[in-house]
Amino acid sequence: MNRRRPLLFGAAVAAVAALALTGCAGNPGSGGDSDKPAAGAEYDLVAEGTLTVCSDIPYAPFEFEGGDNGTGYTGFDIDLLDAIAKKLDLKLAVQDTGFDALQSGATLAAGTCDIGASAMTITDERKANIDFADPYYDSLQSLLVRTDSGIEGIDGLDGKKVGVQQGTTGESYATENAKGAELVQFPSDGELWPAIQAGQIDAILQDLPVNIEHEKADETYKVVETYNTDEQYGWAFAKGEKVELREAVNKALGELRDSGEYDKIYDSYFSAE
Image (cartoon, rainbow, N blue to C red; front, top):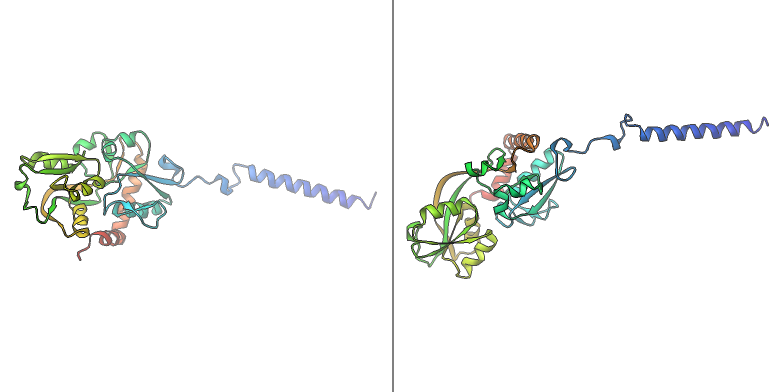
């Protein structure tokens, strides 16, 4: 009997130790990794630990397919938000969404994504339905035509077909100023650009950076006029929701400006040749 006592004692110790370890693993106050809140828990995110972005793609240079950030998309909007997501210790996910539903606030109200990023101009009309982060880009409107079209500006559009993107400030500007023109609505630049190439429309009136991309891609086309409309782009949030996330995005954007990282990303898309 005496020789078996150490064995029994050792077994009992092992059992107690195992129970103690089990208790620690399940103890809410143990401080284990399983008790650590997910990154961004305070932001009421659509997906845990992920900043989900809705954007109307393609709209180069702001958003288009490509890049190496794991989302399948890149562009000025996407790269900036990728940098912001990293500052917030979040992953980035991007969903291709129609612009009209995005700018109206319907997509954001439905909880499809946390933030709308689609070269969206901040307007009082949109502010009625969505909240905006601080402005991150100043833009102009512009007119793109074929070099042999004979069109020199907006005054020469009488009787011409002018392509615009539905629900945009470009459409609003064309409605007010392109007198005598027939406005043809398209859902996105992905349809506008092929339409002018196919001769279905005579001109495109939209944001300058996007038309410049087309001018660079094909010397058959040129920007003949620009229009200062005092537009600023902002990222959009569901009205009255995600206040903490919007404040965090604003703070991160300010830090990117202060550190010079904003300028680095900006210059990669808009620097002079």
